[in-house]
Length: 167
Image 1: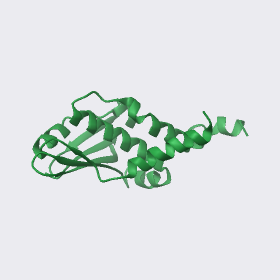
Image 2: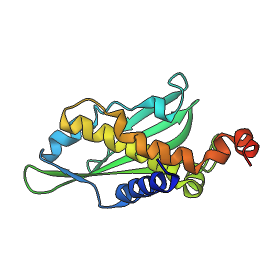
Image 3: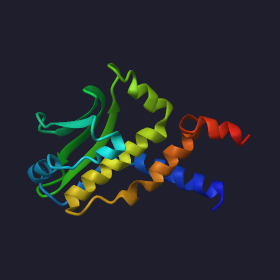
Image 4: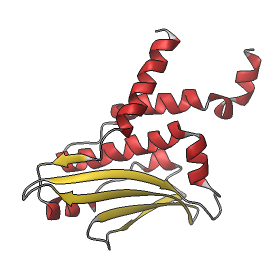
């Protein structure tokens, strides 16, 4: 497969993830809210499971927030905003916000510099939400294009020695 085709696929993945304001599910708001509290976070995507944790905040009736922490410090938030779309349908919009302070510094600023990385986390969390609300297992293959795009976009930072050897 040629690089330009892979690049086109990665770009399409980024653009599709940015489109729209959430998904609509054929479930009433209260049921969606209850199910969102049970979403299993794919913690292996966010870091070592030994030092990474997610705390669920459901105090706001219009959203569920997963606060991702590593070694006790805030890293990012995953926010699922929920709103009714009629009596038996609910719109869910998932967003990611990086922390701006603490041990890991300006994560949101790094997300702005590395949008593919933020998109990878977003695609992963959207799949976690979709799989829970659709009553199916999490499908890691849904995240592969975003993971590939993030890896390609950040190759210099991820593999600095091997990158310089191939010049």
